[in-house]
Length: 288
Length: 164
Image 1 (cartoon, each protein chain N blue to C red):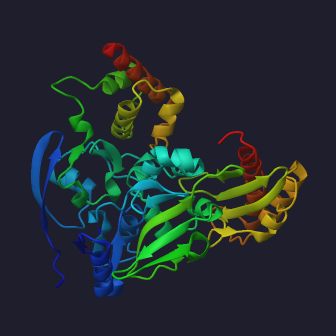
Image 2 (cartoon, rainbow over the protein chains, first blue to last red):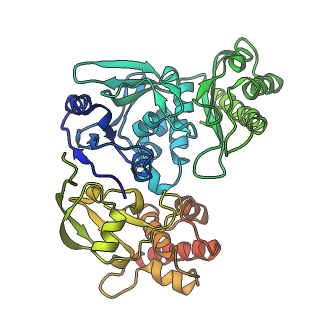
């Protein structure tokens, strides 16, 4: 049984932020509830005030805006999986959303909740970091923008302040010459490991690359050693293998119930190889 | 708050019938439908949204009632397995599960059928691969998955033939 709490129904983000500020440690944001309700029921977290941001209109909107896609924080994984705009402009995000947990979780769980809960074993964050996404956090009187790369600071810890509400994620739209891919391995609902790769080609040379590894360490993180192995070079198989090996070798890995450090490094190397192959193929205009 | 649990009134529709109730915000939808409405088709098992036996439909979408607040159902339509048969006629999925012997112990069957019902809404005549994608995360402890997949495919085909 959950401990008693009160549900607040703000009409605006500013009101939600004021409620969070007023109740401090006793309050938290309530969105899909797929992470929050189980931890509250199991007594791992207790709040006497839930601020239900689903009563704020428009926070689930998904829309292209110039060279980017704006994804409202309350967009569910299912909405992202099926959104024509995301399928057209950032298809890898739709693919990742379609693989989250199961249909019931995807129907209810939101992108914003997933990111703010910051459970290490999760897929969307690694892809958003690789894509150079920006997270927009709002208070009652101001907004600030944070690179997805700098949002996560530890296991279930982010730079979001207690009275801030994540309102949307902005993702650069796909552009010619760029390819994005995500490869994951999961034995259960949550992934053991995931690797996102974005490769930008100019002719035969890689001009920019991002390799992000998720689920194996405390936070999803870029692996600069792998990216440096790609930039300025032709994406031949041996180059991609070298970068994949660096991804597996250099990423911070923690041992947990999903596997040992050695095992995870091996899985990451294999997944990075798959993701890089796919990203290069997509950058060359094959696949999507 | 002075330690007393706050109460709120909700109005919702359950299996086509209007329901009004006073609930506590912390009350879970699964407890509400089982203990207050006596609808026991949805079961409590894993309690963490990985097994699917507590599945109900909220406005036609599958959710895990074990981790959903009853509050979320206010003003909405809840469908449980008890509400699927209309006017004394079994749903085509229920008939197909019987015809294909897709029920062994029956514990997972309500969740399987309700989840499959949302699939048939989205994809009227699904392939086995589409059935697997929707039923992933709805676990059969008897591991009778093939019969279940066959039954859903057959129900889809039959429903589509009836429409044509």
